[in-house]
Length: 436
Ligand code: HSE
View 1 (cartoon, rainbow, N blue to C red):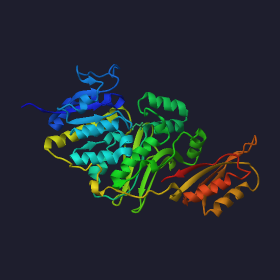
View 2: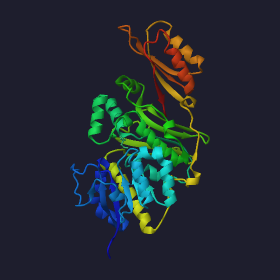
View 3: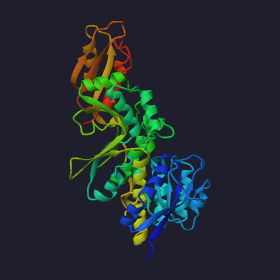
View 4: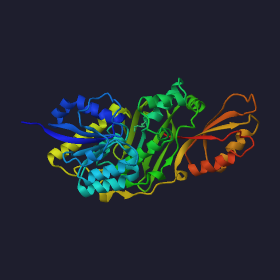
């Protein structure tokens, strides 16, 4: 009997696209044995059809015209790996209009235009797979959408940007500066086209916006997420964290107390005993907490051609299974039925409660410590530990480091703006939130 074939069109033949083509070729037999059908790439559209991607593509498959995939009558599934907002959005909407299922790794697009895309899919009762959009090969989307379906999530936290984690790991190991580590991450194909997205936390914000939607059925505007990147983290900060028994990680955090969401991205200090403290290099980790379990932590390859490519291929096979079995809307795209995805208010960063690591640079004079701790006390901030280092050699001050007990961010910010105006304070104080 002839094996059935699911026909696919691929938009974008870059790092991930070529990984997908490689995996589909190399694992054709494995996929056929598992799926009971074959996957065939009928069209690959990219503006650049000249560069050698190290994979063989049959004659007539490569095209510069995305419409050859979007309008091809035999194509069942369109894989969008162009990235960014446009033309990816227009192409996906056109694919849906033409009755194609969609697979994408485009976190920016889903974070910004998710409502529009999910509604269009629902109208046509088509599926979308986007496992590759968050944390590369880690099956976090499948876990939330299909495994933890009876669980009420209370927190999702993760290291979800491989490039930033690579840079911070290299800085922590002490053998690389920021720029060199970034260049290496780019050369390995981890970074976004614009690496600002990686290092300034925007990519992590896209990803946590998606996970927030899936975990809580929450419609949030990702632009409302508080985002801080890692570009201001200095080797001194990294060393200081180490001395205190902590590591600095770029965390994407989404907590839900049943009323409002606390969603933010920023570098955080985590104790070296924390399960995510030793997630290094391009590895990602996502911790999910719910009403049944303190935590489950998923760890894996967060970026790169084959890890993300493998997540994309997993989605293609999943969609193919739906097609072969005639199932439609088997798993709701957003994890919840569309009518149950609702806006949930987002806390402003000033309303969060956290522990803080404060790195002051102060004159080494009598009374300085009491002036600073006095201001903190006036703002209801309790100090957990304090350490002053070295002697002032050149009038530039000395580092004074404090860890606080849990405090309200607004109180911390108010206290710091007062402290930074004191004549004994030499530089703007560095603040890092502590997560446990
Ligand atoms: N630039 C992203 C990262 C790629 O470094 O994690 C995966 O989304």
